[in-house]
Image 1 (cartoon, rainbow, N blue to C red):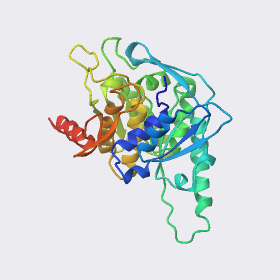
Image 2: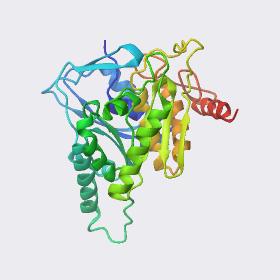
Image 3: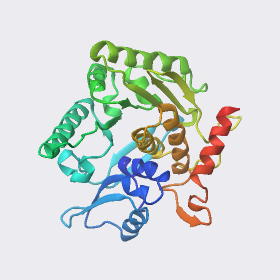
Image 4: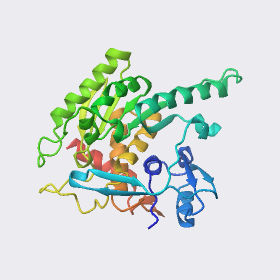
Amino acid sequence: MNIIGGAGSYAAIGARLFSPPPSSESVGWIVDEGCDFPLEIRQTIRSWNTSCLLRRSAERVTTKAWNGYGVDQQRAFKYLTPKLLLDEHALTPRLLMSRSFHLICSPERCIDLVQRIIARRREATHNQQKQQLHAPLFVWEPVPTSCLPSELENCIKALKYVDVVSPNHHELGSLFGDDPRGDKDSGVAKLQVDKWVAELFERTVESHGHKVSVVIRAGREGCYLRSQEGSSWLPAYHQPTEDGADQPEVVDPTGGGNAFLGCLSMALAQGMTLKEAAEKASVAASFVIEQVGMPILSKDSRGETWNGICVIDRLASYKSRLEQ
């Protein structure tokens, strides 16, 4: 079965959902096509009208993977074909000057990528007089294998270089050597999450004088935000039923967190507050988890719709719910 996947793809669609043409062209990402890349997937990607760099190679197969979920949406994942790593040299001049970057990597690689991207940007504008080089926004999503107690100090070192860090609640608990659930039936232990996030936030200030924003993605429990403006929980758009089960609209959680961060990165780059950006991101994630694969883009008298819904209408509904 050929299903569009990958963290970068989901992040791109998250940013794209609230960016109809011509704004859609501000969404930049890279897709490596192998010799077996399906034509229908290429056509779907092009239909989104993003600034996607499609790099073709007849000498390798397309990266594919298997994804599954266990109890409490704990994920299992493995590559089926060799993967490719992107670095700063993969960025075209236009992509290099992006206003935000979403990084999914280890703390060491995060530091290296940030430093190298900034260095390349300075080199690119060195001979261009009077050009104002804006500081890009870096949103870091640590890979699960780096969310271990042995990596805590390295993670804190990396926070000096980014603007936002966002593990999910399982990864946050693993980083501190604990379980983020109060017990197996009580959902996320929100007081414990608050304690761990406070430690990350305060230690970053103490070590680097840098006030990183922390966003914890907690699936059906929503997300937790901590910045210099304060802290708060936001509910997920699709709320669990009274017995704690997922709503029938939720089909597959794959990519929801990546789409959340893609949308968050875009919204923050546009000048929104962390809370405003997280509200949009929560709605973006809701479209991604309603099917296996990507939401369906259509057009009608209202303009663009995704899964038959106008994203602005869903955002208004979500904000109205928050005000109640």
